[in-house]
Image (cartoon, rainbow, N blue to C red; front, side, top):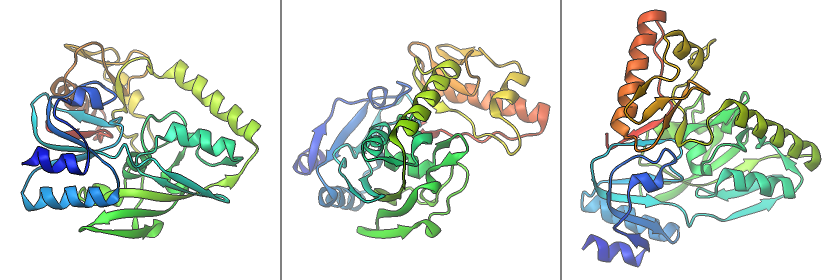
Length: 295
């Protein structure tokens, strides 16, 4: 019944796993996977799942997601087909499934600036808004003007004042069933040569300082106020610490990497150990930046 219904409203698969769908390459099998064709199909799918009490998870590129090894018996909804954008002067309308590195190239071609800070984040617009992701002392709150949200089967507009943006935080983390559909971003006119040079410089810095050649979910912990998570992790001697195939990166100790066949349970065990030891030594409670699911 589920399979037949979903096939009407998107590209359906029953042989996916979170290992395929996350940048850290961890996680169990998935009973049902669907890429809705459009907003109306998404609304139909969500309504059907709610009425039938079927669990579901909406994902983008899985770049900030840690999943357990057990099979998920619900439905994973990926907004891959939500990939349209439109530029009107310095305002970009962009759907939730658009990859940010791609959007940065669109920005460059249109002589705009403002998203340079996000050029190296391998996520979708929806995911970055959800996390208020950022780098280099900027985040999505600096460019978001409005967000279109599927809330209670209706698409509504939410302006920036309603989004409760804070460091690595948005209102969507309080309301996981509010689904980001699209956003309006406000950028600025820029010199593409200077903007490209800045992006390339930051890309070089990332290659030098981050383990971008290894599967990861990006930074594991938020930086506590006035300090850096990596310094605290170094302070407890955990750079290079390992549980099975999961390891604190020797290159950047706020990255936990999958060295070969790691699992989400080991990732979380290592992260919890770090939290406990940092708290015991420094009295600081590190907050995880990654999202946990099915763990």
